Image (cartoon, rainbow, N blue to C red; front, side, top):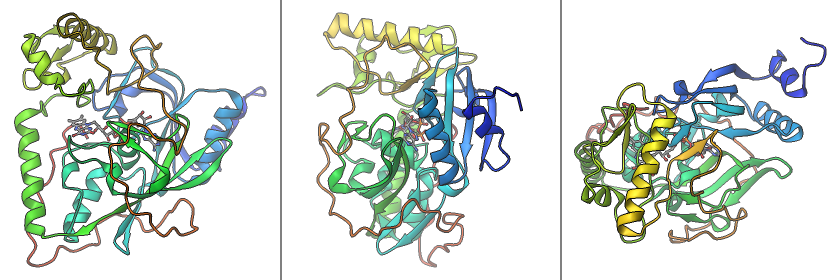
Length: 366
Ligand SMILES: Cc1cc2nc3c(=O)[nH]c(=O)nc-3n(C[C@H](O)[C@H](O)[C@H](O)COP(=O)(O)OP(=O)(O)OC[C@H]3O[C@@H](n4cnc5c(N)ncnc54)[C@H](O)[C@@H]3O)c2cc1C
């Protein structure tokens, strides 16, 4: 090791560091857009110790860091990210079911929860079928549909924040809004408890199939995307506004406004982040000029200088942000911090003999 290695470099080359370290890792490998320049370090932390040690060193050294899940809602700049991109590995992918709730690591996929709930004749997660990404990303974004969202199912979330340590927040201490949550920007989500309810498996399957069919009809699932690019303004649909303006099919470089859904910008082949940004700016200008509406991106921008409207500033953890969710009953908390629990999600769970077969989401981007 170089004599003048920084504490971050020392940590990352330490044999005892429980994580996978990829220097200068192209982020195009870690985003559903297949776009993004190199992260100075892409690190998959496999244990709580590795994660907290890494975040603490970054915070102490002033090295920028950002969490990433499946990268299904991020656009990374072509220049990449001059810091550490942190992903959750091994110990954060566990899931177990006890007393009517799932204890899930934030690195588990949302679809694994959907499928596990279905196998257990439980309902409440059908809305999420086909939504790519991890549980951590879903909680940060409060992923969902127009009428249902993940925050509604939350009993508690365990997070880590430099200076605050590991904290377990109960539902009553969290707020959820339209694609926004009350976690602090530098708060890493590690695991959560999600409430499920007994349900008729045939009804659950019907709802899942309906949701999947709607996605297949209305979303461009065969090309790399990040899902909806902009948030829908109050009382309006970006898809419809874009369609009214005749912007579907508009292309800049390799980025194209989808012919299928006006709020999706697809990577039609070799698109750069600059192409996507230029197209986003074009759509925003056209919508502002005609409808007087300023569109706010839903997609999270990583590695860019902030010259687009920001996400509304995060409230301090626990403070309210445009609450849309009805309060979830507060769960009786256990003292246990971030769990490692059983591994291998639902593989061990046999489907009940009479249960219908779960529709499997086409996560082409996942
Ligand atoms: C085809 C397609 C369909 C989609 N459909 C939907 C939909 O129906 N509804 C919907 O809401 N979204 C949808 N999305 C968007 C996206 O899938 C969701 O927002 C998803 O929840 C993001 O999860 P992720 O793990 O990919 O997060 P990422 O995209 O990796 O990250 C998203 C944000 O969460 C942060 N983050 C990630 N993990 C953590 C963590 N552990 N701790 C703290 N912060 C974290 C990141 O820093 C970033 O700000 C869709 C996307 C695609 C490509």
